[in-house]
Length: 501
Image (cartoon, rainbow, N blue to C red; front, top):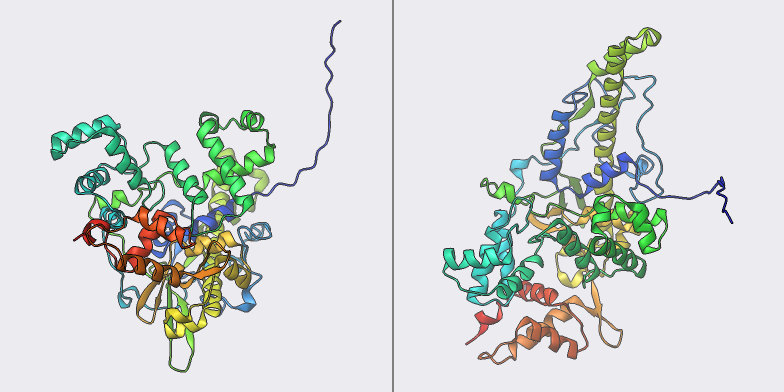
């Protein structure tokens, strides 16, 4: 019996959450520390002739002022209500309506103390102190660091690396020993460093989020991460080919979920060694504060943003006039004039969007830092760890009105100059851990417990970090080896080999 084929047309309503082009641009700008942000502004100025720097005529008196409570309705939260882009209407092209970014007032760069500078390679080598490594393992690790390519990857096989160590370093080790040390390198920051492929780089970043002892991952976030890992680990070729339909069928998930997972994976960094190319040219990464905070004996706190070398930005008047000229006779445009109209419009829109994103970046940074200061006010005034209250990202999100992911992006790579001393923003947070009984233990108490263990150890046979993990677990506190190493470094406790004797 023959089977007939029929076509059925059906309507389906789906609600999808997607970031617009301007919101994606804002997310990228939020993640950038000041030095990188300055470079991005310079790049935009070079790439877009409709974006210009310097004065552009008289503007309103409030241009350049720090954001205030009256400005709360001027921007968007990348993960908030997802309202549409704030790009101005391009039909009238009134010069008074075009967006202008004026850097906020602040100290000049040469007046600001800079943090410790060091090459990216030195930064990686400094993390070796977090691990109990033998002399040979240290040599292998340094060789691996020196073998990283510009992306931060190891592009040679273990067998080749083993041969090179023998011929160049006179170090005769097995491939298993090299691989063991490579895993140590892959636990360094930035996440993904030392990967042997893009696939492994992505997996390292996802696994770091899944196993992060210092940031509690919700059940929903964990489920999302596990699905991301499944795609990269088992359907990587389909991911590269953007074959979403087959991934949807193999994983048994909806098209909306596949799109969302792809968007999340695209946020991962496939070039963890970006700064390595700079270090090879003898450039250094310098710690430049994004915020300047000053206090006085009367309990007043003043905070401002460091605008660095970012100039005043505006849309080119010449391009606006050119667009107006095209619009005077739209019906009589030749083909080349229509192409010119489209090009001019696109450049003006891109310039507007970038200026709006820069202005929103400033507002978001300002409101985030203000929330941190209000929540941690006593610590800012005394600088005493005893006065630091428990503070997590969710607290700042509620105070500032932004999403937790937005706060995380702001705090991940920025620092503040507080009364002459530079603090990474995460230093203003305070986490507590739970013991086996479910009771919260201050991080300071955890450090004291580690210090007690080291003080009472047998100096002829000191504890390794793995042993410290085990002993802390016996005391009811579960820590990752990475966390133990971090606390040990903060306490000034050297590695096991250096404590022996």
